[in-house]
Image (cartoon, rainbow, N blue to C red; front, side, top):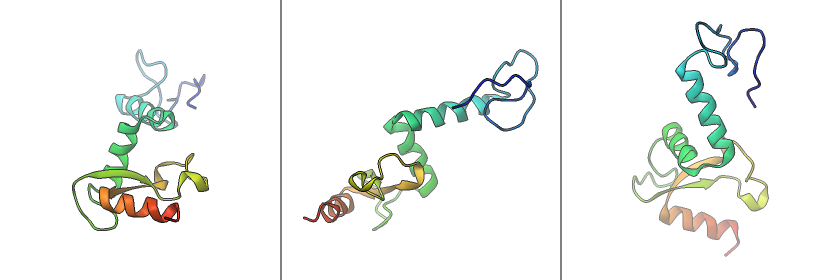
Length: 107
């Protein structure tokens, strides 16, 4: 995912030169970025819930409620939406999530 580079540049792809004792990441922000990407790909729910909420706001995409929020796949997993990036997720309140899930399954 982030291969070790032999040219003295940061492995995250930012283009920064490694300085001092740094061998892979140029800054602590680069380390945090790479760790967050790995956690999202690994499926660590708390991490992608945090980034989806930060990106879209902490409110339901449909009704704008701010409580009982859940992360929902925009394209359902049963239609190929399981292996997608953060752009396939949205925040929904419990009621809107249940309604969308029922619609996705044709109930």
